[in-house]
Image 1 (tube, rainbow, N blue to C red):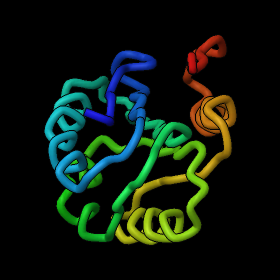
Image 2 (cartoon, helix red, strand yellow; image 1 turned 180 degrees about the vertical axis):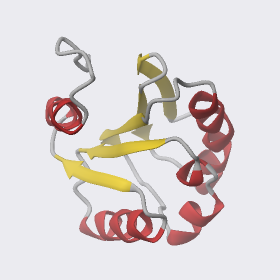
Image 3 (tube, one colour; image 1 turned 90 degrees about the vertical axis):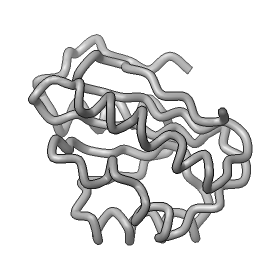
Image 4 (cartoon, rainbow, N blue to C red; image 1 turned 60 degrees about the vertical axis):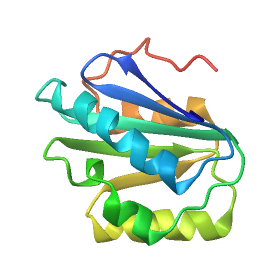
Length: 132
């Protein structure tokens, strides 16, 4: 699968790494494990860093967000999207995030994503970093 989920910090920060071309089916398939990770997490807000630097074609639509259950999870933290260059996708993601009242930011690099989260959530460990 071209989307890999992993904990950067167990119970607090999820890495959602997009690699290569993805399909709408990939979005649906990843929803269940992402919901499980959120459900198994610490009661503190759980942040998601979406890495898109290695993404290929991404057929993102508002429909993809409306079908995803993780965007409605009761334990939301921030979603920080790194490296998304496509202006149409940025507009769709931004619009959907506002519609679902998600706390979301766009940044250029994984390092900026981590720095953004550390600024927003000062309870995160200072030595936390993303290995790319």
